[in-house]
Length: 492
Length: 139
Image (cartoon, rainbow over all chains, first blue to last red; front, side, top):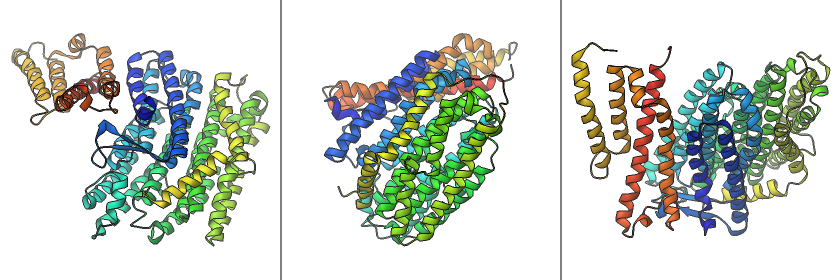
């Protein structure tokens, strides 16, 4: 019986826990509640994915109101994979959080931090699970407002500025998104995604829809940090507390990418084919620019978190490139790379966060002596770094391979060259970390390995970088079916 | 602070009970006319802020301590989510109000009533917390 309600509980449990967490007012109970909630949410998402894979889409009626009038939660393989990713990253990051947050954030703010994290988790899971376009906006605001708090709690005063920058651009993005949804609502009179897809086919005056698509593209482009709209991202990731950076970098932009896929292919796809629109050409041009320019920018950063942030912009470029290619193979590559990038960037931010905590400095030059004093951390950074480059045997390779073969399949050989060429740029910036860690003289006094409670979560993600690089049955197969589902439309 | 200004003090003391009463009217009349938890919450916060403006931050914090405000902010959310779970416990879906009473129409009223109470609690305390944060700066 309880199993029937799991789609609602996936979102409702973190929401309730966020409220209770804020009332606890003590650090350790708040952390324990946040950790337990994350584990429960991850278990629910794994169960939902298993059921969606075996029994097809699950529909849940919130408040027992029939769709399309009421809000419907709809779980299929595309968003179930995303739910597992978001909740899974949360469950891995939270055990790491206790020691890290204790070092980085003032004691009295701890419960607020964990409450904000849980609200952010609620929002991201809600954005993924709901099939109601307006409900997406509500959860987008929940996730965004709480992520501004997560960023602003960073110990550097510049964190406030970074959060404010993100607040302005994030609000513009969310507003554009809701204006786009508004245009679709004007012509169809419905907000349910399945219903929207059906009704858009009968629309006669297409101009409002075209305007709506433009607003949706720019709004979501801001949220997912597509190349010229990525301005908020480097500061936000650089100054947020480590746990916030690792969680947001692995999940927040990914959920925006999923929404883009959902709107372009499931909602608009049947009546306004993506490939026939001018969007793919723009999308591919911006993605290639992101891959190359952001990689070059990453090479020139002095701060290690900023460098990884620019690398994220480049990696998001790979994902949007797959969307721009637009074929089923391209989407499969995009979804796989989305999942894989979350795993490796999560691992890197956790490992680097530990190194900064010990070294006390955000600059790459300050990593001197890391290889000898924190060997486990350093080994993790090397593995996740190789994965970022795309060395065979790691997750990064799987995603790039799928994307390059999708590009070749479409006869766009130059895209495959861009993908491989930009990997060479990744070699340069990953090498900068390795060089500093191995050959620079230690800059600070004695520091030792991270405590085991922080090393374990970081290494779980690092191990997954290799595991999903060798065993692709979960990622590639589910992503392939998810891509087919998205392209096939909402007819199911 | 206007400790020696008689007129604002007397007027404020006269106004505040009516402000709170009006907030309750807006709250409970919300299902029938314009109004609801958000508007009522703002009016409650206005009463607290008026008191603070006339009698000072220290006095108002004796009546509405910051600790209480910080507990009320999440309490409203918990109440709201709690209504959702009550629907589950009564055998319906999440946020299902139909099952909250044998008569489904009355069940809807009951669900909305408690949701609006949650909104009142969170909105009024959030407004108060924002005022405290601004008024307390630089001290």
